[in-house]
Image 1: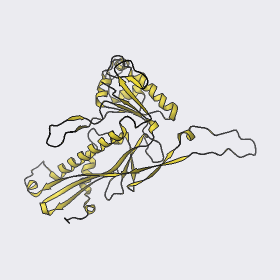
Image 2: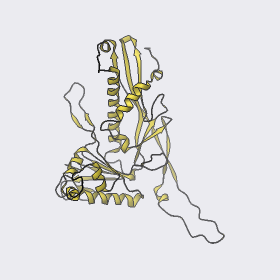
Image 3: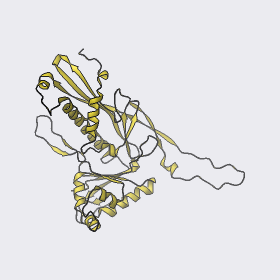
Image 4: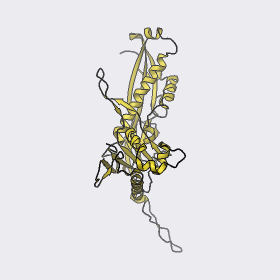
Length: 323
């Protein structure tokens, strides 16, 4: 068996710190849609709450000398399992011997490994949370004459995004008690909203005079608008690149808890396994160890997490928001 037999003793805090710094850059939005919940064990359970019990009042008038009415709520249980994703880059002795400043192969390898893992997390959040059949309500954009469950795409002249999205907010609030506070829109959808005539008419007298995410958030009545801009190459190695935005031309309206906790509702959470030796708060760890048989040092990254829908009724998905 090749040595080392256990990589846990080779977790590199300096390289992990480089990875953490790199994570704070770029266009990755996964933790904004599904806030991180650190967990000590890889798999476990969490409580779910019955919406009907929380939104029904059992309080009754109390007569003198009598007990108050007793009531409560039903609890359910769901489970999570934080899967481990890994990738490595070997830095051989000959290449390192030829490096010259500002090249730093260990740093560059760490950033490349981190990029690989961040893109994987973004892809998993997209497939797990950003699609039809996931949330309590799905809508589909059409060019004209929308029927039930449809809306006019935002790049069409007849579209009116602001009243439409505000009405959708009220619908969620009327059935859950939570007003959605986050709007996640694909990059092409954001571009269409920036050129939408009804939005431009609303903001033409503002001091800014142009549309940005903060202005859109105020117009739609949400705390924040998030525009995922990560791209991916879906072609196999050796083939011509096939590039696309990870999140595509759709939109998600959701309530994302600003104070994430396993005991509070939110559309989705990310369970990050921090009990994995050396893993930091997001479940990421970077190892560096020697492979003498190939005269190289290996920089290996691992990400232990799972994105998971917590409250399906706290999300509404809008497919094909633009043509």
